[in-house]
Image 1 (cartoon, rainbow, N blue to C red):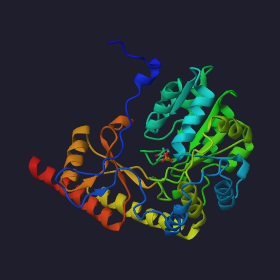
Image 2 (tube, rainbow, N blue to C red; image 1 turned 180 degrees about the vertical axis):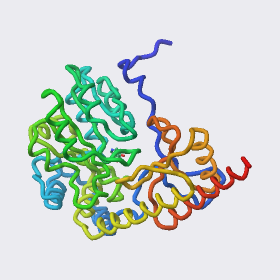
Image 3 (cartoon, helix red, strand yellow; image 1 turned 135 degrees about the vertical axis):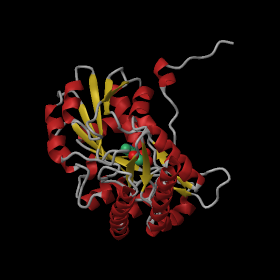
Image 4 (cartoon, rainbow, N blue to C red; image 1 turned 90 degrees about the horizontal axis):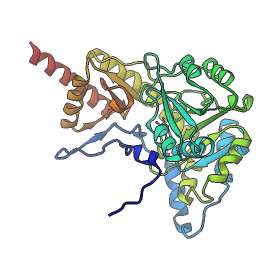
Length: 365
Ligand SMILES: *Cc1c(COP(=O)(O)O)cnc(C)c1O
């Protein structure tokens, strides 16, 4: 039978691998594989969703005015320069369709987020990976790789799964050094974990070729609601709005995100707790001989001696009901990404890694 063929680039897309949440035959599983907030969303966000439950027959706003104004007030930004999407994933996808969908190149870095490649291919763009240097974004390598065909450059800052960061000087160097036809996109999914940091949002006021993305899925604990936002020059927001579905965000999603961003006390509590537990977990892993770069996000990239050791540790953790993330697909086969959970989860994973390391040493003696 003759099959109907899609555009060739579609078949190059490997299906996205989400973090697992169950282990067969193991109870009391702790999921540390998807960088979710272990404390859940603000109680005010949950209450806001309850309140709109009787309005589900109504269409949502199409301009997201209340949410954009809440974001703008909170971070001291311009509401007209904000676009909201079904997760920041949708914003990344709009960018690929709008600026590179005619076969243009989309650059991202070696250990960058897997959605850049997927969104580029889906849009008909050509994904291009640029090397990093010791798990840190390399500005010079990006500048060297960017050319006539390049349309977009995606930089995750802080990085996922590396947790490392580049500073404002480096971002400026990119914005100023890239050829003028290229849009620089800074993905700030983890920006909220850094005190007083706006994910370089205000820096976009100074550049016509720079855009940022943020999300409610990480610090705000709303991954299940699917809300993200983009910020940058208004002419870019206006462009992206042409391909945005008019009702892309649901009534409950809008209500939850607005309440969550306005609850500063809760967000701050989660941020402080993440910082404390992240330092503790990194220290505990180091004591067991597992090193990591200083992470600025809500996870730690644990480095092992080899791919075999990382996989053996992952298997052991799974047998103990602890799910972490393998990151071979991100060019880091000897590493495991471990989300910073609540205190009990951090203690549990550190203890299990210690047991694994001891057992291994026991065997080799
Ligand atoms: C989690 C994450 C996102 C956010 O995705 P959403 O679609 O907003 O849930 C974006 N970029 C990176 C690098 C991430 O890790």
